[in-house]
Length: 161
Image 1: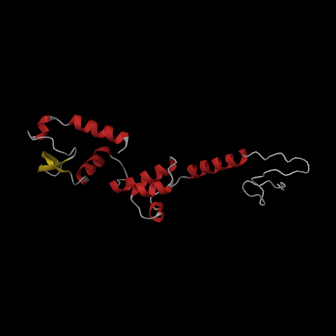
Image 2: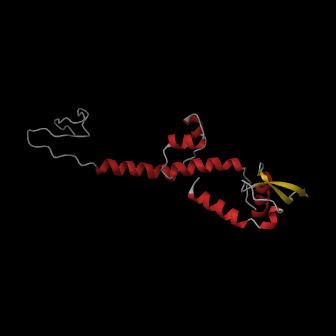
Image 3: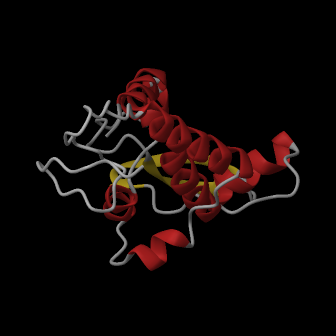
């Protein structure tokens, strides 16, 4: 669990009023199952011994109250997570594991890179390539040249660049 998620859970625990627990012990769940609905959106009690199993009603209510358009599904947040993770520099193999995918092909469907991200990546690569210092070749001698097609790691060759 991330530090930010842990803080949300801690705030959630502190925010639960004792009267909302209906005199029962808190139990092992921070998000308890709703019990005793009155009307389509109003809950009058919780079963603290069982976990919440459906977020749909809370999500729909939040969308309605916020006026977010177009509406989105909770599942759509996986696309946001995948995209932001890669744009923040996470490698795709780690992302694949964190998202629970068996293949990179699946992860690729969740990552939607922006043109700005691709441009920044290209500029970083260009900066890296231009920062390489070509060694000065001694007169009639050999020097290591990372750009030479004939060079091998650890060998000095006549630079043909």
